[in-house]
Image (cartoon, rainbow, N blue to C red; front, side, top):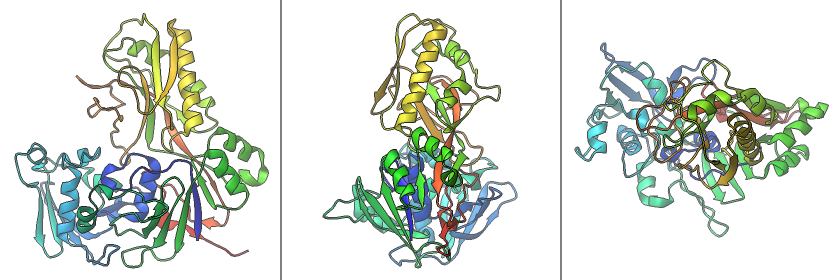
Amino acid sequence: MLRVALTQEPQSLDPAQMASLEERLLLQALYRGLVAGDPVEGKPQPALAARWERSPDGLVYTFYLKPASFFSGRPIGPEDVKYSLTRLVDPAVGSPWAFLLRNVAGVTAFARGQAPEVEGIRVVGPAAVEITLVQPQADFLASLACPAAAIVDRFQVEAAGARFGRPGGWTDSSAVAGGSGPFSLVEWVRGHFLTLESNRAGDGASGGPRRVEVRFLESEEAFLAFVAGEVELALGLDGDGLRESAADLQLAACRRLFPLAGTVALAWPGGVAGAGAAAAALDRKALVRLLDGLGQAWDDGRAAWAGPDGQALKEPVELSYPAKGLALYLPPPATQSLAQGAAAQLSRALGVKFKARPTAAPNPAGPALVARLAPYQGADWRPALPEAGPTDGDRGAGEGQVPLIPLLRPTLAALVEERVQGFAISPFGDLDWAALRLDITN
């Protein structure tokens, strides 16, 4: 058994609704897509698809499925693939990851209600699916490796309705997750714990733990649980736990910091002046020093990106940040420290009072601290703001989009019990749960 402490609880385990790193970690354990990312080389590898063919013009991919089953025991067929990928781009589902398939033929017409199905996703045999693109896309297979593009059990999804991917309660701890990953979800009690069990019915990896117990704890509680030997893996620690672990020789050997393929930034709505001045004024290395190793400064020459406006600020500015932290990028205390540090820097540099305020969600009326993990290595990332369209943080924002001021690249902080072997962070920023195993020998 592997016991894990997470400092942030997932809101949903529906792949199409993936919104945070802890959800991504668990979804990787519960689901499989057509392809998967290789944790060493980062190249797409077969998953539910045994193999695939690409047409000479690079527009048509044909995937041939290998024998595999959902948790229910029902065989996974090409209709399930078509259903899952269509669901990802269905406006009624509202997935923030629909852009992964924006280059598939017929997606735009389907999303606008002009077609009953996606023309470019076709079942072409008892175990084959064909996907046609509008134009060649070198990273199309990598986009399919994103956990959001996982194949779901359509009967489970339709039967569960709004309950799909949601937890139960003390009297009914059942949770609905129709996947085929190395683990199945057997119980989830909101605010307390969830339990995974090895899924031998699907295409789960051999070896590894037979059971994974995940507890949701505050950062200090997670640290103390690790010290007491109650968990073998603690993720999402804040600065206090990191400082204590660094000072203790035994714990220092268990301390891990993993850079993630994402970015923490200030989203600066176009109606608020001063984006360019703010971008140039921020001392990112000083901000990172506030975080005790939870990030790396964005210092590759693009950090001082100047937005389209060069106006000076005249009135006090409210900088908002999420009260619950930025998922596992930064836990709440670190998020607060970063926001307050940025506000203090901007106040001194620009001569205007900046006040950092926690909110339930980023405030689109003023600058907001946001974060997003890249869906796969080298991919674009999007801020979680309601009025923001697809935005590239490296190149600035286009017309009608929210300018982003990159601050740092987040780092996942973990304490890993020395007996846990095979622990890895892939180039895609995911924990490779299938590779986790617990060596209980002395």
